[in-house]
Amino acid sequence: MKRLGVALIGCGTIGKVHAMGFKTSRYVDLIIACDIIKEKVLKLVKEFGFKEYTTDYKEAIEKDNVQIVSIATPPKYHAEIALYALERGKHVFCEKPMATNLNDALQMVKLAKENNLKLCIDYQNRFLPPYQETKRLIEKGCIGKILQIRARIAYHILEVLPPNSSMLKWLFEPQIAGGGVLFDVGSHWVDLMMWLCSKKVRKVFALLGNLDDKIPRTVEDSAILVCELEEGIQAIVDVSWAIKRSLPLVEVYGDKGAIIAGLPHRLMYYSESCEPIGKWTTIELPTGEEPHLLLIRRFIESINKNKEPPVTGIDGYCSLKVLMVAYESAKDGEVKNVEYQEIIP
Image 1 (cartoon, rainbow, N blue to C red):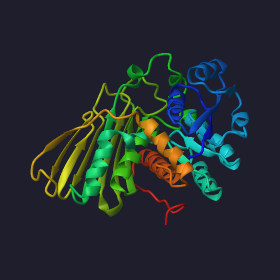
Image 2: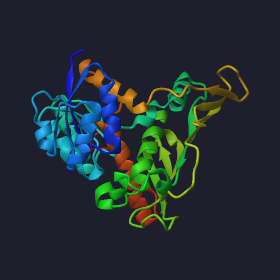
Image 3: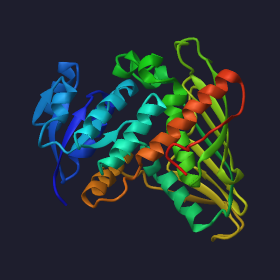
Image 4: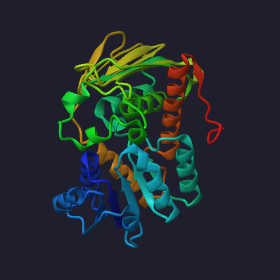
């Protein structure tokens, strides 16, 4: 496989994770890092060995020896940077959510397709061992036809992030972040839910809340989505920044069994068609490799082997569509239909 030059845009917390992921690949050269704060980019360049740095993302993208642009900025800037890169023939690895409005997301998908470029969205939770095993059991037919799915994650954002975290400077600003916990965390679990089921959300009802007075009320700190997916599958996505702690649980119920995953590094399943039949079985799973690294490695492979990225632009667009319709539902207090006719037949 040929070597690929990378430009990293955004040198904060998630930018370091991107840099680590690309650095572990023998098929990548770390060409240039970019951040509007010079001190941040210099620190990251020194830590990971980028050859150059800049505070201008356009300068980074326009480098002739750059083939991949990795976007690790706050959501407001994702589409602007991605579109600039795609217009100049660069493959894009983009943080989630891929944009803060559907028009920009749709344009990213179309431009990547028109220019035969790879666009991958960073939904790394798909690569966590409990959910990989859940997907395997589902595809093996161990729980039969899926009837219901529930996805739950909660933690207290002000206790998880240190007070000096760069994310806290924009995370509660909707014009930069795009939304609150639903946009930031719910985005992951909506994607995971649809990926596990291989079905899209068709209807959604959303309940948003502000449960902790210490978290600015500019955005929601808690959200519950009640969804109907294709083939009548029922689902609940439940996320919060206000609850002290919960396990990242995903429960999948079928007509022949059930799976409870993420306990952590553990999975339980009950099956009427896979051994051992008719009893709850626990699978202990290895911690596994850091999921961002696995996703980035698959993304690099998709470029070199000219195949579909592990998480496509369409995947990113569909999860964003659900989020946007969910915000409409919460505002109106009504169940809303989710239509994907722009890109999906």
